[in-house]
Picture 1 (tube, rainbow, N blue to C red):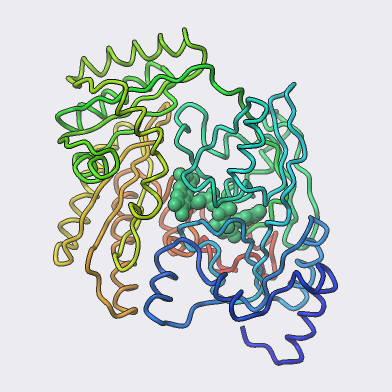
Picture 2: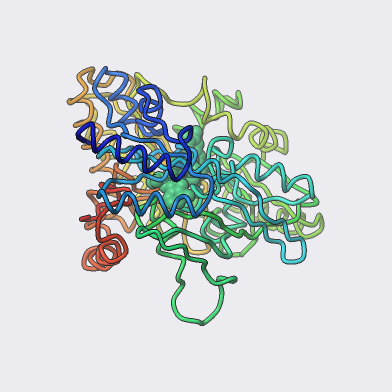
Amino acid sequence: MLFTSLEFEMIRSELADVVGDEFVSVSDVAKLVYATDWSWMPQMWLDRAQTPASPDFIVHPANAQEISAVLKIANTYKIPVVPWGGGSGTQGGTVPIFGGIVLDVKRLDQILEINETNLTATAQCGVNGAIFERALNEHNLTFPHYPSSAAAATVGGYLAARGSGVISTKYGKAEDLVVSLEAVMPDGTFVKMPPVPNHATGPMLMNFLVGAEGTMGVITAATFQIERMPEHRIFRAVLFDDLHSALEAGREIMLARLQPSVLRLYDDASTKSLVKRVLNLDLEGAYLILVFDGYQEIAAAQYERAMKIVSQYGARDLGEHPGKEWWEHRYDFYFPPLTLSLPKMYGTIETVTTFENIEKLYWAKKKAIEEGFAEYKTRYIAHFSHWFPWGVMVYDRFIIDEPPQDAQQAIQLHNKIWTVAARTSLANGGMLNEHHGIGLKLGRLMREQYGDAFPILDKLKQTLDPRGIMNPGKLGFSV
Ligand SMILES: Cc1cc2nc3c(=O)[nH]c(=O)nc-3n(C[C@H](O)[C@H](O)[C@H](O)COP(=O)(O)OP(=O)(O)OC[C@H]3O[C@@H](n4cnc5c(N)ncnc54)[C@H](O)[C@@H]3O)c2cc1C
């Protein structure tokens, strides 16, 4: 943003009055650190020596009152405010494209209550996911949202981006695990949502904040449903000759309501690449990992029934070891040296749809990516990892080993692939996204997703944030 030096100093000193001098950063180094999240676009932009979109001020508030005061200042000067949790988002949600204030909430780091009577835990938004989990584990409890980014993400970010963890098939997405929350609205008002989520006292008030990616306010604390650590876990891996049989077996397991905590199905391309590299298994076909947990006798009964189903669909039993091995290495896929990184071009174009649409969606996307971008030798790999009673998500990726070196050409190609992928999902009954969010990357397609319903969301945003300060340029909103 362009400020005169006087304006800049006025704003900086007002912010410092609220949070303290040492908690307002304006150094070039800090601005660079907050110029990119985990999305490919800003990382590539920096890598190709382009000028990044960076904030003018990085503010580190200590509590909701300070956040409220910062938002009031932002309204006065009409400055963008970008809430920043762990910065592990992959959709450009925290990229400060119009400059302004990055509001890093990590100082709100208190676990306020672990309640063993209700099996709930209340944490401030900046609590790191892994620290939250370790604190619960000390009481033999767990927060059953295990994203691969737990070591980097915050619990506020879990909700803001509506994420899914590896055991979501049994325990639900982050949004299913929130009981109540507190937030600061764009005008600085502090709100506390009702103490329980399931009632008939009007609409679900907190839903406009969950998944809003910082465009509707700042989540400052949340109460989550937690679980006792499962007494027992059963692991298994099986191999199908073809994806169709594997998806059908998965569907039957879900329709039989057998509650697997993990059903992770790799397509043939992933079996030959990822499964081989990470688990050292030389296989061809559709590789399925099953995990059941809970009381031993219940988990065992569910597992046995599921094994009957997979064998009816022709699966070859690979035993316990490869399933357990996957569990122990489940995060390795996402970190160096195994994770995708520059100079490659890549994107996780994941989506979710009903069982009846999933196969046609998968094949349509595979064709659109591999054939549509054949000149770049574009690869398409996928796994199916978050299952619902009515359908399943596909975590699919495109990968180009040698993308254009020119930054503008690279962005153009990247956006074109994303647009084709997203439109193919929509044309086949899918959503723009299942768990990474929309951010900067997919905002332009929100109107296509929601059609005549989008103006309802847009009006809500305009009403709550008439000055358009909260994370502008994200989710396709007009302010
Ligand atoms: C290696 C890797 C693996 C990943 N694996 C998973 C996975 O398994 N499952 C999954 O769901 N995601 C995954 N992600 C994506 C990401 O980690 C999640 O979206 C996570 O929930 C983001 O949390 P965060 O605290 O880092 O949020 P940030 O990246 O800081 O923010 C994400 C968005 O939420 C907004 N926001 C952040 N905090 C708040 C707040 N307190 N109030 C309001 N808005 C806020 C930001 O403005 C931004 O728009 C992965 C990312 C990486 C890099």
